[in-house]
Structure formats: structure tokens, C-alpha cells
Image 1 (tube, rainbow, N blue to C red):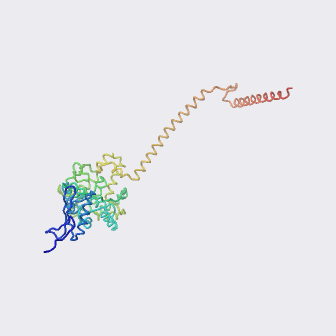
Image 2: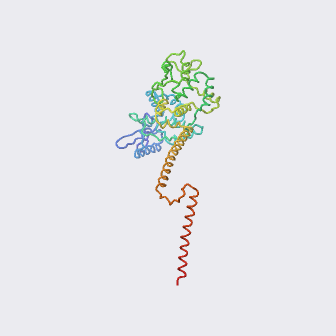
Image 3: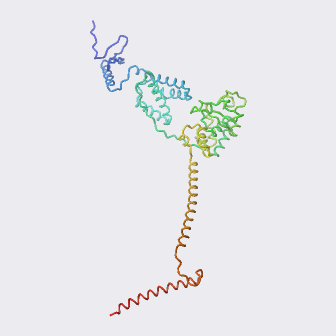
Length: 417
């Protein structure tokens, strides 16, 4: 007969498990979980840790500890598909290439702030921009937020995921001379590139919305082009008139195509999916290396501002939701023009006020001259030079007479006995 093994309180064995199990309770609820060890001391230490977590409010239920991060990612994918988010491909790319190699083997309860910081440092060491790291961390945040909204919640705590400060505000604009060079370079690539460039410069639409366009969105008879609701970032539709050059290029793009065909296709008939290589090549050819297609959006906004297009109409055409986002597209020339207009306005105000002050001063001088008494005039007219001289002599002699009178009076006082 074998002696029964003596285990610490709350630690026991199960017939169907090779590891020790622990049992603990708190406020009338019992919890049981595997200690994942055969050491009684380690199992007892784990039990004490769980009881301490219960008292401190940091306890994670055993069922929640078994939820893997890959399960949270599946919830995000399902949410994107239900809501028809267009960026589902970017989400899958960030998970497969970046998040899964680092976090994919972990349970959701194992993700901590320190672990996220180590991930940030690893990505920064490879030269990845802070903005790119933030987009990936945003996916991780979304996974935990959706997990807390489930019934019952799949995670009990939302870990703090630090975000990096971004300083990647783009300021690129395409001036008229540079635009002409780009147009010639686009023409050498193909009709689709010329049309994409012209529409981007005219309306400031994002390349993602342009690549989704179909032939039926161009109405040559009514001379309008439409963006269907749901194909833009703000989910709104739009219908605008086509200028002459846009109309000429798009009419060539729709020739021989059906209504549901893609608007922008290559010479072999395949729709344009990604044109980053072609764009980089034509920018280098035009001497504008580093220019982004999104810079055309800023260029369109600036041109509409300079063309005195109302802010409301410009925001509607470009798809800006807030005025703060639209106002970011002011450039140095806009500020210089504003300062020039301010200077001209101030100069005009100074001229008007200067004329008013001069008129008031002349009027005051005329009133003061008319109110003064006229001095005694000699017989000679005042306008004569001789009359002025005689008046001056008269004043001098009168002053001399008064001075001599005073001197004689003082002399008499001195000789008086």
C-alpha cells in the first residue's frame, strides 16, 4: 500500500491531467485551473498569486486567459467584413507581416504595456517610420476594444498601448511649371496615367477612390463625373462637372468599354491596381523625386483657394469633412497673398484718414485766423512791402520809447534827496 502524497492546501491532482491543479475562492465564487507544473511549491505559489490578484482587483478569469490573440484578430476581420470597410486588405497585411510574428503565439492576457514597448523598439530598429508603427498598434487596440464589447467579454482588461508622436505632415505642392513636366511624363507612360493625374490635380480625390471608378460613373452627355456613395473615405457620393481637359481624357478612357468595366485600365485592358512604380518613375523623370500622389490633393485644394472657390464648395468637391483639415492646405503663397492684401487695405485706410485729417486742419486754421482781432493798419495797404516795413519801424520805435521812459524814471529815483 502506497502512502498518499501530501500536497499544500488548495493544490490537488486530477486523474485526467498530468499537471497539478489549484483551487481558490473569493466572495463566494470558486475557481479551479491547471498550475501547469508538477512541483507542489510552484503550484502553491501560483495559488497565492491568484488570491493576491483577486484582492487587488487584477484577477483574470481562467477562461479569459485561454483566449488567444489570433481569436481577437478573427473578431476584427469579421467586423471589417460586416461593415464593408475598404481597408480590410491593409488590416490583413499588418497582421500577417508584423503583428502575428510577434504576438500571434500569445494569449490576450499576456499582452502588456512593456511587451508593446519592446515591439515598438524592434520596429524602430529596422528603420520603420513612427506613423507606420502607429497604424499597426491601432489594429492591436481595435482587437482589444472589440473583445471588451463582446457578451460575455473575451478580455477583462484593456492594456495600455502607447502611441508614438508623429511628425510626418506633408507639405508638397505642384506648381504650374512642374505640372507641365509631369503631364509630359504621364503621356509617355500611357493614357490611364494622364487621366489619373489630371483628375487628381483637378478634384483632389484620393487614388483609392479613383482606382475603384467604373465607366458608368462618367456621363459624357451631361458632362459630369460621379463618385458613388461608399467608395470614398467619408462614404458620401459626389457629382461634379468635368473641365475640358478632364472630359477629353476620360472620354478616351471609356471608349470601347462596358458600363461595369473599370475606368482606368492599362494598355492590355487590365485594371490599374497599384501604380507606385510608374508614379516614382515619372516623378524622377520630371525632376520631382519624392513627390506623392497625395500631394495632388493639396495642390487641388490650394488651386481652389486661389481661384476664389468658396470654402463650402471646395470642401464638398475634395471630400473634406472639417474646416480644420481643409485649412491645412494653405501654402506660403496663400499667406503672402493675404499679407499683400492686408498691406494694401491698410495703405488705403491711411490715405483716406490722411485726407480727412488734412481737411480738418485746414478748416481749423481758417476759423482761427478769422477769429483773431485785426492789428492797427497804416494808411498804406497791408499788401504793400512798404506798409510792412513802416509797421515794423513803428513797433520798434514804440518799444524803444517805453524802454527810455523806464530808464529816466529809475535815474530820477537815484538823484532824489
